[in-house]
Length: 423
Image 1: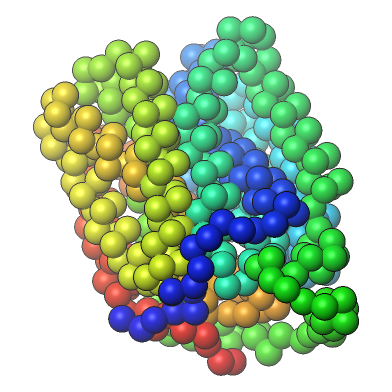
Image 2: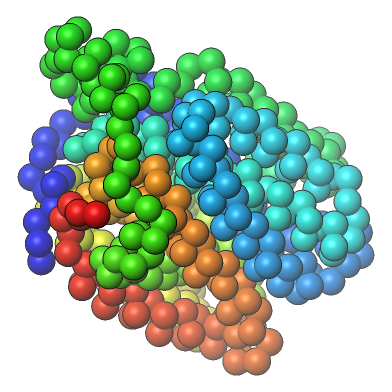
């Protein structure tokens, strides 16, 4: 395996006060991203279908075409972020995301559920997979693995907190009130993002990776950023073999993540556990994910993104296979452990790999194009699950399909040349 730019770099967490602020705010974006389009589906679909008397499977199946609007969102926000910067894109998409999520409390049909889910996906990929990831790449070009290891803990906290938070909000204001409550929290995050985030560390008088630069060097960096013209066109990106290997590998890993997380509670209850115990196990998995997120970031920084990604794929294969086992306490506890450790990894590894292939100036353009492909693959997760549940005997059959797809991802990851690309 080729060594990448991050392998062997410092694993110290000396990001500086402003750098830590950017990581924490990025973590909030990861929190709401995961909760709004992944973790929350564990109860959103059931709550919505029960509240309005509509079919559960129809709502779940509609999440697949709705997720395609995330693809459109990535393409749209990528163009916008290159024109107005990650700060404005983050604030705007968070604001619109807050409004979109609140609309769950207004609609009452499967069609309405689809439209709102599409809007939520469109906005979420603006504030997280575009704005926050571009900002991290600009602030930590050679230490992005470790920085993302901390930031993506937001996703794990979402798995622990978002569903219980929804249940508390349901108890306080009903199903529709819970959607408005989350909308208010996202709106507050939009204000924080707009007030405190800066596109580059130089704008705060800081340096990339919290390094030591003179004022003259900082000003030179700002001038370079303003004048830089990327040699990468969409055509060049879409005809590059390494880009496609990366797209497929991480698109598969994202698909597997969504398949595991979005149905964790229903699968555990189908295996005989109570709703309360299943929800508690999701919290356990999320806490394990905090450790997994940091360890993944540390490994990325220490041994390189490619090696870490292959190990991650093998770990996730074991997690998927554990979901294919006949229902028993042992099998379900094992799956919770394997899923929990693994759920934090994908948020680190994909943007980190893109950062290895492209410099901080080309990152936004490359990420936008590559995100489109990975999202197309991700969007099939719900259709695969729905097909398997209906035609292959339940969760065992559904996850057997996911296991085969996971192997494809591992193979593609092994073929990636983890080094900077030339246009």
